[in-house]
Image 1 (cartoon, helix red, strand yellow):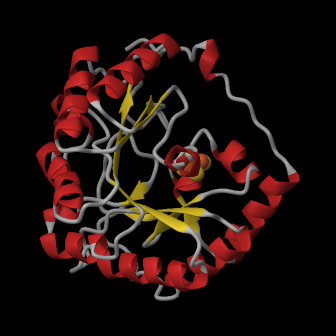
Image 2 (cartoon, helix red, strand yellow):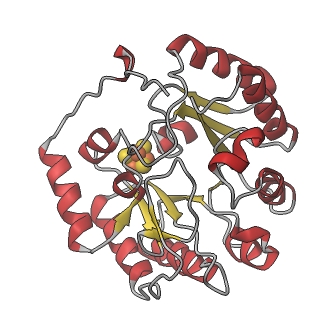
Length: 283
Ligand code: SF4
């Protein structure tokens, strides 16, 4: 397959500031993981320079092997650090975050899917930072209602679960996940817990415009409030190749369609990621 060259609108601007260095030092000081670094997010310099980051719970290794994801994966994983919730809570306080985004690797190896670490972290962050709002970008916990209940019962300000791509591509790029199960997670959050819900997908993996519209229809039909749409970027030559670079105009088309479908907030653009400007999109 012909390797696609990055178009001009994806030529990245790096902006290292003093704030970037202090964010990096603080996160390293607590020995924390971030999805910013683990997933090779293209916005890392921008976000860390503005003093924000998304914390990655339960280690830096995932039990799933999605072909688009830069996070490392393995079958046997270390026991989660019992002090991680407290460390994250303290880091949040030092960073003075008013909106905290938490996510985790998928831990299908743990009996509770890691859901207790999630609740412990939410609790610790709230105790140390009572004014901060909390957004949880959760895995599907293999559809375990017990695990989902545990986390949703903590009533985060935003419950995010990404569908990641169109259902036709799940077998190819996300074989251990299930599109319907992901919709069920969001449905449960919205209709059983009344939570503010969010989802997102990456484009440029071979999906059609119509397939993206169908995903937006599915999300809107279950009352999902927020959606993010961003360009997929191949983390390494071992990962699924980019099939196309979506133009800013096409992203505008997705935004218009999503807004017409009833989403409260739509982020659609080449660099959009789940947690990009997450605080601003809530206000
Ligand atoms: S967009 Fe999210 S994951 Fe990417 S650098 Fe910013 S906070 Fe981190």
